[in-house]
Length: 391
Image (cartoon, rainbow, N blue to C red; front, side, top):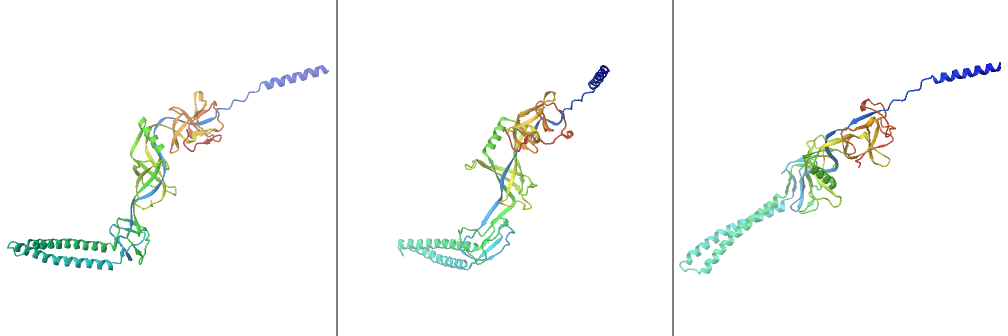
């Protein structure tokens, strides 16, 4: 009886084991999907973003050229004034009196010139009949010449007095926007004083002075010499205003300094901008995007595909042979929009992974596709995105 029970149990165990072996195994998971962008040669603008200041295209300080007391101010502060417009009047009574004295001295000299001229002519005639000595005749001729010289001198004195009287009416030297007046009616002003009465600035056109490192200029010239970089004649410049907005009118680069500032190692560049609405104010801090030229054969990689490893090196993950992940160490030059110009590490035809980077390891087999079709992670978490040019 017991032997039968044991045989039955063994039979049950064998059936259970056979049933377990007959179960199907779970299928292997599919390769992770990633979004890739195929690298190709493109044309890319060479752009630098540089700090700068707005400078008026013309600036003139209104200064007195004579001494006196201001009698009237004839402009509104902050208004637009035209060249030649009357701005200040200085008390002119002393200068009118000086002009009158000069005119009287001129009249006296003109009156004496006729008498001396006639006397010189009579003495010349009398010398011929020996009625007077030659010495007396020469003295009469010299007196006539001196009288003519006195007339010329007094005429110049009248002109000087007239100029000084005209200086009592101070006019705008240029057209533009005038600032606040630092002197009020009743104030004493002097020629050569340290403070200007007011300042006029022409702002319908403005200049932007920016600084660029000498190293960047050398890199650009070497790249141009080596080929592959074309220089944009009259390089275009865009402005970023203090509030972060972009100024709607593009400017043009006019010139660069011929010397390097020894304290900063930078070169000053100047661009001009049209300013019809007066939005750009002199002294305003801005950032200028300078498009210096164009790299004709560049590899542009999306920024989300360039990351940094724990050692701080710029790296990229690409899909290699047999759809296996490879890690490349790369070098970047500068950003162009949402892409990096890659100078080393990537070549035409490489499939750069830009989506699905989470938990990827070198050698992992992946399923590449378009970035928009990938539903995996959109941004790398194991590595830190590059925020500056890396080499």
